[in-house]
Image 1 (cartoon, chains in turn red, cyan):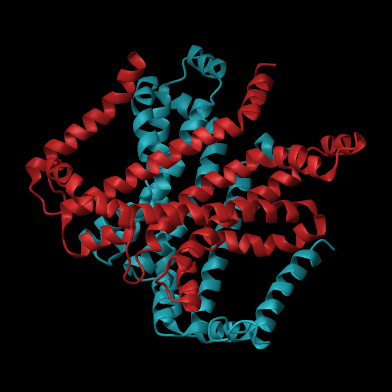
Image 2 (cartoon, rainbow over the protein chains, first blue to last red):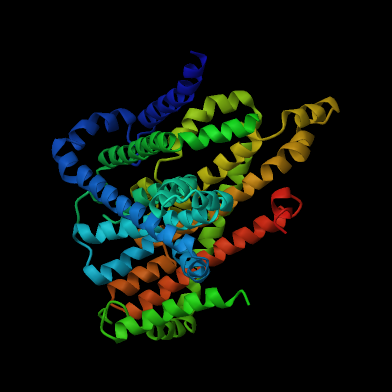
Length: 255
Length: 252
C-alpha cells in the first residue's frame, strides 16, 4: 500500500502541476492539459491508428526482427573466429559509432525515400550494430571449459551452438537488443520525417507545421507512452528468457 | 605484430568500396569509389565551412554533454542519498526514461526553430537519463558498513559524499559518461540533419539533396570517425579516472 502510494504520488503531483500551470499560463506552446486530453480521442481515431500508427509499428517490428536475426547470426560467426574478429573489429567500431540517422541520406541515395523498404532498411541497419557487437562480445566470453566439456561429451555442433554458445551469449545479446530497441524507436520516427509520408512521426510533424499545437502534444504523449510500453514489454521478455541467468546471479551473490 | 589484422580488415573494406562501384556491381552514382570519397573529403578539409560545421557540431555536443553530466550527477547523488527521494522518484524516472527524445523534436522546432537551442534540448534530455540512472546505481552500491563507519567517526554529510559515496559511484558515473557521450552525439547530429541546426549533420543533408554524392559520403565518414574518437576518448577518460579502481588495475 505504502509502495503504491509512493509510486503514484510524484507522477500525480507532476500531472496536477502541468494541469494547473498550463491552464493558467495561456501560452501558445503549452496548451492546457485539459485541451490536449480532450482532442486526444478525435486526433488518434481509428482511421489514424490503422493508417499511421500501425504501419509505423509494423515497420519497426520488421526492421527490428531483421536486425535481431542478422545481428545474432553475424555476431556468432564473427565471434567464433579469432582472426575474423580481429579484422572486423575496427570496421564494426566505425559502424557502431556512426550516428544512425546519417544512414537516412545515404539510403535515400539508393532508393529514394518514399516507400516502406527504405524505412525498414534504415531501422534494421541502425539496430544491427549494437546487437552484432554485443553478440560478438558474448560469444567471446563463453567459458572455454564449458565449450571443451560440451565437446568432450560429444554434443553435436547444433546442440553446442544452441545450448552452449547461444545460451552463454544471451545475457549480452539481450543487452544489445535493449540498446537497439531505443535506437529503433528513434529511427522509426525520424525515418518518417523525410519526404511526404504517412506514419506516426510524420503525422506529429504535420501537426507541428500546421501549428495545431494541442494535436502535436497528443502525438508527443502517444510517443512517450509507446516508449514506456515497449520498455515494459522488453523487460517481460527479458525476465522470461534470462530467468536462469538472473537466478544464477542471485544464487552467486548469496553464496 | 598485433596491428596487422585490424589494418587488414580496414584495407579489405576500403578495397571493396573501391572495386564494387568500379566493377559496376553498384551504380557509382549511388556509391562512388572509395578514392573519390577521399578526394571529396580532401576538397572539404581545405574549406572554412567544413571546419565551421565541425566546430558547431563538437561545440553543441560538448555543451549538451557537460550540462547533462552536471545535472545528472547532482540529481543522482541527491536522490540516491536520500531514501525518501529515491522511493518517491523511482516510478517517475522509470516512466520518463524510455520516452524517446525524438518525441520532443516537434516541440523544440516550434519553440526554437533551427537555432542551436533545439539541438541542446534534445542532447541534454537524452544524455541526462543515461547519467542519472548510472549515478543512482552507483550511489545504491555504497557499502552500508563503510557509510555507517564514516558516520560514527562524525564525518559531515559533505564529508561522507566526498570520501564514501563519490569514490563508490565514480565507476558508474564513468559508465554514464561513456553512454551519454555516444547518445549526445547521435542527438546532436539528428538535430542538425532533421531540424537544420547548423553543423555537420546539416551539411550532410545539404550535400545529399544537392546531389553531391561523394561529399555526402565524405561527411558521413567524418561523422563516423568523430563517433569513434568520442568512444575511444570516453574509454580513455574512464581508464584514467579509475586508475586506482580494481576493475582497471586487474586488467593491467
